Structures are given as C-alpha cells and as structure tokens.
Length: 196
Picture: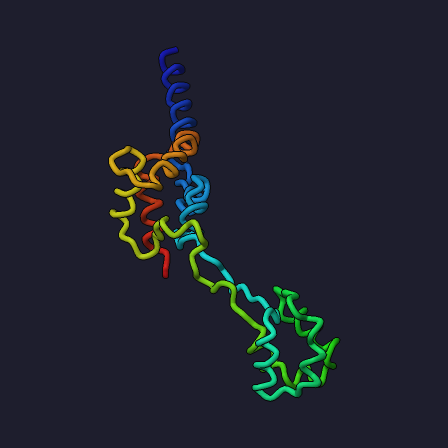
C-alpha cells in the first residue's frame, strides 16, 4: 500500500511540475504590448512617431497662381485652375485628377512638376514625433540594464517625473499578467536589441 501511495504521489508531482518547467517563457515583445507600453513609447520602443509623410495639396493663396506663371505656365491655363482655390487634397492622385479635369490631361502632365512644386506641401514627415508624446523616451539604443532600472525605479516610486504616474497606471496589467523581475529584464533586453 505504501508503494502505491508513493507511486501515485510521484506520478502527480511529475504531471504537475514537468509541464510547468516545460512551459514556454513569456514573449517579451508580447508583454511589452500587453502592458500597453507601446501606447506611449511606440512600437518596439521607437517612440510615438508618424509612420508616413502626410502630404497636402492646395492653392490656398493667389500668390501660388502667380508663382506658376513665373515658372512658365501660360496665364490662360493657370486661370482655369481657379475653381481649386482653397480646396484641400490629402491624396496626390485625386488632386491631379481634378487638375486634369480643369486643364486637360496633356497640360496636367506637361506642367505637373510646377503644379506639385507650388501646390504640394508636406504636413508632417515620417519619423516626426506625434505632438503630445515629445517627453516620452524612445528606448531604441538604450542599454538593457539602464532600461530595467528605469522601469523598476518608476514602478517602485524611486523615480518621479511628469510621466511616472502614467507608467504606474500599468500596475493592474503587471499584477494580472504576473510579471516578474525576470520578465522586466527580458523586456529590457528585447528593447535594447531593437535596431534604430
């Protein structure tokens, strides 16, 4: 009977502890997202940046028409563009379609460089920080130990600044996901290896 109890106990221990020891480690990239870090520090810690150029096309000032004439467009053709005055376009193709509808496809293609040169504006550039997120640090290029210490110091109240309270707001996520010191070190290691 003792042998049977010992066998059953050993079997139970094997069934409980072996799967735990074989459990896959938590993915630090997934943890970074689960803890909502990306909402302030951007994907992969790159900062909250614009991922594309935002272009605008418009003839907002009458001076723009004068510029086109100065650059060599005939006055007769420029006058046909007046209906576009103060209209804005976010898509280049749509803008050029409207231009072609007014002055014809041939002239639209012939003077495209002048028209885009005068009417095209970059509203923001790829890689620019999104307004409101300028004070949140980018983690790209930082050392693993530095990142780990910053996380721990802020979460444990040893470091306070304007953004510390926002970071301490993730405490419920830390508790519900049972995040350990080792997990923080793995997140820091992951972020330190992201290429600029």
